[in-house]
Image (spheres, rainbow, N blue to C red):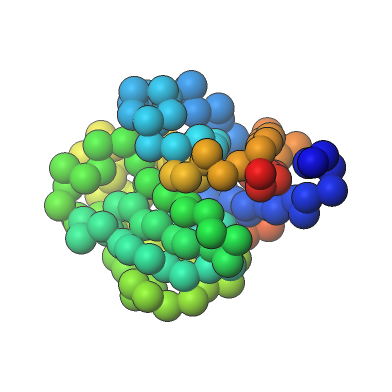
Length: 159
């Protein structure tokens, strides 16, 4: 069957910043797509938003990353910064609770940028589809710099 007849979907930017290919992420787990396929953003600002409508399936106890399950069955992971798990939650605040249904653009996390900067943390934020085997095609958004909750960072079609 031709994929041109399948419905296209979009993920919006969970954070504002410069769009990066996953290969540019300074962590092999993301750069080599071991956690899934998608895009990354050099994050600016301090609020992290839901990139699509769906259920907030988990937030890491350290509040540095969260996952969502979308209505189409895709599983999305948003991971704020590199090595931020080592902070054990310092520099992050939950704004939503696991299990809630979110709309694209709803706030999920707050970043205390000063704390992360003082700790020497990277703000590169991968946005990946964990079960990318369900995706027929994906492509990045059209803008090199994106605004959180507004600009598309990834367009995709399901198999």
